[in-house]
Image (tube, rainbow, N blue to C red; front, side, top):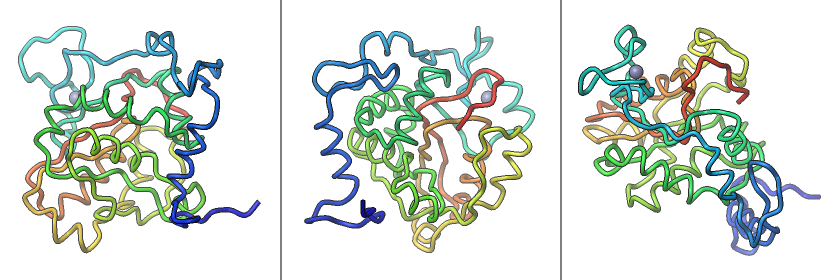
Length: 258
Ligand SMILES: [Zn+2]
């Protein structure tokens, strides 16, 4: 079967729209359990009840949940020892088996049907950050990976959050200049080395981000090394502020498989 190039159009409909159209024609199936569902639903109530929502109290900077809060605005040991380059990060879901199934369905399966639900939860967790931002910037993928996969799941999430919040999204301000290998089995240190220098602003990004409040959007916050590498590149344009909103966040010391 002929492949549709990324960005190519068939009868005026681009690849993303085609995915959406065919997604809705398929019978409902849970993205978590693969069980059949009514209509074109992708989650059951049981799936949602199994999700681990991150709730306060949190580290004011990286959003890591605390058992209890001593002081307002408290930050965790990791943030005080090695402060991230962005100000605050928030995520609705803890990264676990359930949320990872949703993210893998999005990232590897190109399943778009959960996007509006994901965006609602990202808005709930990061409302304060998103409501006051000037621009959403998705973590970009290298053009070779984009050509192979055909989409960037962080870009989809940013578009969905933009539709809900009205905050503009810019896909062309930040680019991935180094095709780093997948970080699945890497330690925190290897992750940092793997993404060092992997991102750069485009000319438009350099020219237009000065004094703006930026929110970086990604699917998972693991060690924060990718987000830090993005923030390092964005800082060159001297924005007013950089925050981060992701769909899930690793809260336990484990190596995610994505
Ligand atoms: Zn922290």
